[in-house]
Every structure is written in C-alpha cells, then in structure tokens.
Length: 415
Image 1 (cartoon, rainbow, N blue to C red):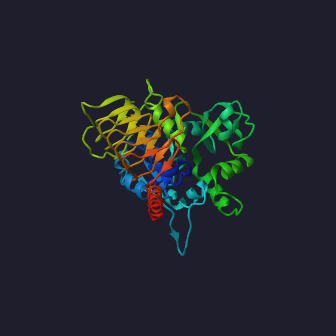
Image 2 (cartoon, rainbow, N blue to C red; image 1 turned 45 degrees about the horizontal axis):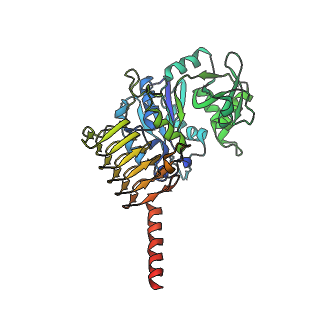
Image 3 (cartoon, rainbow, N blue to C red; image 1 turned 90 degrees about the vertical axis):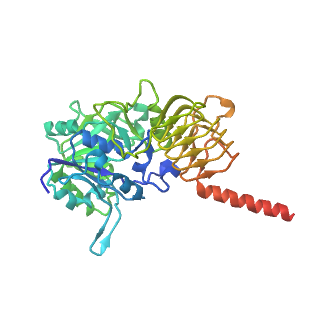
C-alpha cells in the first residue's frame, strides 16, 4: 500500500437503541434519510468531497444491510486499487476474538490496517450525523496549530450544553478541559465526535489504554482526558453550519423535516457539495391526476394517488387514492392503501398499511408538541386499523395482538 497523509476511520457499529424499532434489525448508519439516502451517505460524501480517498468503516451491530449498501464504495468514488473503502468488523486473532469495546478500542483493534498506509494523520468520524463538512480545512487547521489532536466543535445554546461533551478553551481555542455532559457547563462548545490525531501519538495512547482494565476505551471519556492531563496540544476547530446528531427518533424526524423548509435549513441541492448514495435504478416518481402534493420530497420510483402534505416520501413508495399523509416520513418501498390517514409518523421500510386506517392522528387536529408514531419495518397493518399517536408497532407486536384477539374470541365463544 502507498503512504497516505491522512486516512479516515468511520465508526459505524453502534446499535442506536434510541431509534427504537428502526434499528431493531438495522445498524443506525444504514437507516434511510431524506427520501433517497441513508445516514452514512453524508459522512462518506464528506470524505469524497474533502479529498479523503481511504476510509475504514468499522461495523459491528446488524452489519448485513450496511455492508451490502457500502459494497465496493463506487457511489462515493471509493472503489480504488490504491485506497478506497474497507469494511472492518471485529475479527478473530488466533484463538481470541472480541467485540469492539468502545470507540477507542475499535480503532485500536485496527492498528494493523492503519499501519499499512503509514499515515501522518488519522481522521476519526461518526456514521450517524447529518452535516456537510470539508475535512481538508480541519486537517489544515490541525497542521497550522502543530496540534497533537484537534476536535471539531459546534456552538450550542448554553442551556442545552449539558447534553453534550463540552470543550473548555482559551482565547486561541486551545482546549484545557473536557467535560462530559456537565450539570453547569462553562462553555457552549460541544464536541461533534470528529477528531484529527497525529497517528503515532494516538497509537501510543491506544496501546496504553488497552492495558488499562478500568478504562471504558472511549475517546471522550478516556483518551482525550488522558492526553489533556499529559499536556498534549489539543485544539477546538469551530464548525459553522448545519449539524444534527440523529440518534433519537425526534432528532431524526426533525432533521428530515428541516429539508422541507424554504429556503432549506439543510440544502441537498448544492452543486458544489453533492451528497452521493447508491442508485436503485428506479423510474421517475409518478404524481397521478387524483394526487395533491404540497411541500414534500417525493423520491424516484414512487407513485402518489392521494394527498401529501409536508412529508418525506422515499424511494419506491405507493400511496393509494383518498389517503392523506401529513408531517410524516414514509421510508422506502412502503405501501399505503386507500382512504388511510397518516400523521406525525415514521413508517419504516417495506411496511404495508391497509385501507381505511388511521395512524398517529392529532386529537381534534389541534397543534401541539409532536408525539411520533412509529411502524417498524415489514409490518403489515390490516384494514381499518387505528394506531394511536405515540405508539411503536412492528410485525412481531402485531402477531401478538392478533393471537391475543383470537384467544379472546375463542373464550367468548366458549362462554
């Protein structure tokens, strides 16, 4: 392998419990977003647009669909003989094997992979954030500051700072203290989970951390505090732009809804910074004469015969006549029957919803704080079903409900 000045290591193995049923059978970075993308597309596209041509993707939880989606990296111009994209799951080492035990340990277990490129710098990224960022500018900043490590930060509201890892800095943005979700934050510079390290320095810290039985093997909890205590030079790189951690249902929903603002809060249509994803090779979307669509994203392969308001309609979705979709995300290949109302909901991939259903309706149509309804992937909702707002239902739950109904019916008949 030829020497690379910088390679990226993309952490994509998280389970994403806070996304509920969406990640029951799917790694968080593979969750659909924005009609035609998956969450990981944004970080991979940032790498391509920033000139980072060697990316290791560290997978662990439910990796099948994510691995298949990444493939050889062709959509992001990462199908290269020299560099490219590499999927890196945990593996056996002789007779011993173990899962990734933390963000730092995930990198540590791949030291051999990194060493073959002999990089000067390593860029550590997360696969579950929505943003557009030129990493080359951050690397240049790191170089100019002669830093051992540089951490990307975004300024948040001080009242919200206790939800983040906070970087306390001097006037030159050199970090002197890291606080993990402090009760009384001293600053509003929140870590974005994006790091540039001098590789040889980081490697020594990773090896030492692996030997520490009390460590959680985490960058924020262990590596960064240890580097600071040893007087390492660490700078904060201020990022100004849209950034959203879509690790919860509410943040995932809101980030999708941000695409519908005018002008868009997050712009997918910027020709100077394209977001790439795997092309499904589907025909254009179809809007039937009976359809009424306003303020919506409608992706390729979809057929709309009903009404859509302020919603994301993903690839290959079918919406039948007289159905109404409001303030919702309909994920790929879902099918919605006739005369069905869906409001304030996330409908996962390949869900089938029958005729005359009501999903997540607002009481009396009144405005309120949105309480999301979630239908998990592959669920089949029978005709005339009512799913109350705030509920989460998947195919297993539906079968349990059906079995309970059948048992009740048998007991009633016996009486």
